[in-house]
Image (cartoon, rainbow, N blue to C red):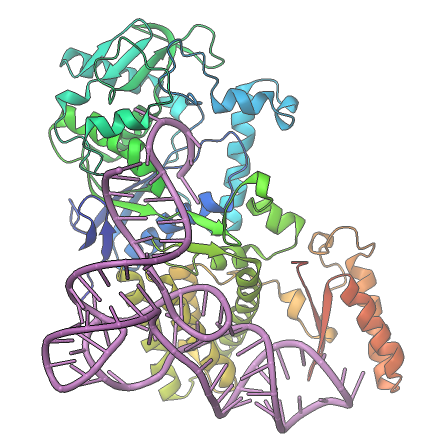
Amino acid sequence: MNQEFRLFNTLHGKVEPLTLIERDHLRFYSCGPTVYSYAHIGNFRSFLTADLILRTARELGWKTTYVTNITDVGHLTNDDTMDASGEDRMARALRSTEGTRFANVWDLARYYSDALQADWHQLNLLPPDVQPRATEHIREQIQVIEQLLDQGIAYTTSSGVYFSVSKFPEYGKLSGNKAAHALEHAVRDVVVDPEKQDPRDFALWKKDENHLMQWYSPWGWGFPGWHIECSVMAQAYLGDQIDVHAGGEDLIFPHHECEIAQAEALTGVPFARHWVHTRFLQVEGQKMAKRTGNFFTVRDLVQDRGVTPLAVRLALISGQYRKPFNFTFSTLKDSERHIGRLNQAYSIALEAKNQGKEGLGHIQDDVQEKLQMILRALLDDLNTPLAIAHALDGVRTILKYKDVVGMQAYEFMEGVSRILGIVDPTPKEAENAPLSQLNLSRSIGQVPPNNGLDAAEIDELIKKRSVARQSRDFSTADQIRDQLLEMNIELKDGADGTTWELKSNI
RNA sequence: GGUGACGUGGCCGAGUGGCUAGGCAGAGGCCUGCAAAGCCUUGUACGGCGGUUCGAAUCCGUCCGUCACCUCCA
């Protein structure tokens, strides 16, 4: 049985089997966001790649140690500014319209990292084992900078401490950006610190007594450079060598390149074996940006537009992580339907299991085979489109043979839930319950805002309509159906009565 | 200028030499008071041009096109 987990490794430019330092134990670090605003769906595409790596590894029976950081200290918008007066993103966020409600940058960071956790949970991302914050590891960062200085790999100027790239000949091995002249070309528009010894050198520490977030260091008051936090925290929790390091494609250079330099210059051993990068998504064919109006956070879609969170998850993983991906509302709509079918199949499977049904043999073999195919697709460089196709295939089988499926159908759906995370593990039974079982105290929170109705009133209307239908007064019945539809509530008449579900307004 | 990725039917998106991907939309049917959902059936394809081969979407070359990154960014 071939259970190799193959992933594209940016370091070598090809798909390679994951080899672990410690047998059956994955040490995994994934770069998290800077919490200066709500994380957007692009951020989450990247986190979802990490989530799928984690789920796949666990499915193989591996032990996993998953660390993903929260960057809660701003980086300079311009690393090379002479006097470090370039405003950082946290400070800029505080000054913005939205930021005025926060007393200071610390409150702002706390607020947005709490929001991140909430969105993380909504999209059914597995919790990390450790979620370290940069501000809680300043001491360790200072210690590493001191070691780099001691070994002559870093040097100080009047404005800060810099890593000396010339002391690490392998610099550029990840991104291919080896030529100094290319880097000079890249910084052409930037004010260069005249004390820097090499244009490639990057900041480890910035001296600044006026910065909103500052700490005392051997070099006076200031704050750490951006790159040092991740390598330090990764090493603190996972050791000098880790198996997989992941992040967005933009992090390849300079962030990850610099992490490698900082870590390996000191330890002399490879920092991460496998580098995994998620491609940026586009939205409706364009780069996502606030100015083009195609910028979306999870809450924009879920809270404001009523999209099922799992549909957002499914839409975001419907393309393979390193292929160009265009996020569209059409995809999102498809995903909502698919989530509905998945949940429907799950209910059927759960019922079959509760009744202890045996199920027909060939159907059982079929879904068991499909579950293996899902795992195999993910083992092949996280081929999520193929995995999802197999999952939907299985769903179709279950829906088609809903009266004769058994225990294995349940195991299949549990597997899909475990591996892909696209099945609601706690289905809202009320939403799909027959009329006779409708619970009048259903949560009002499920009703979209501004429709002027609470759940009890909806039930009343449904009952009124049922009475009208029984007396064959179809014009009244249809009128009620239309009325509810206007409030994004769609009715379905089944054999066991009428059910309703919320429709998003996308 | 440098680095890298990608081009499959109306749309999204699998498929690394011969064997049905899947979904959405479209068409027809079953079911339904009518819908919706579900089920059944169904058409359309591999950017252009060369080459290798018995045979190429799949390998090679070349051209065209699209996109991303290059110390703000997941």
